[in-house]
Length: 103
Image (cartoon, rainbow, N blue to C red; front, side):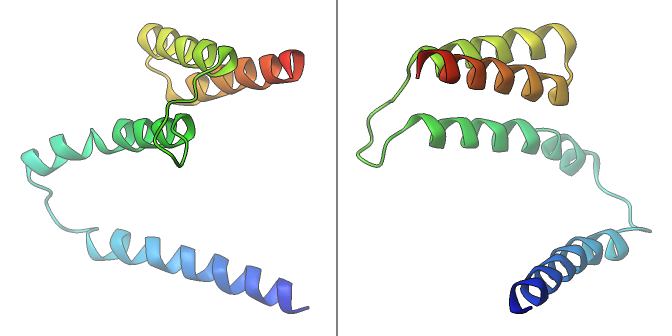
């Protein structure tokens, strides 16, 4: 039962930590410069996640065939469609498929 309580408390904490900003900024005007800067947050986070996946704790790059082909797939899909969700789905499908086949 304690795991369920922890999950519920974590979920509520996550919800309220996000809701505070939505409620606090609901009637405010966001300056154009800030809005322009916020457009780059998503791609920056995606790049940070990819880099942390490809770099070992020793600082070496660990890029194999599954990672390379998944990155190439992601680059092509986002370039052609500009759809981030489709990019993630297709790139992860390529990555997992190659990992399953190549081991």
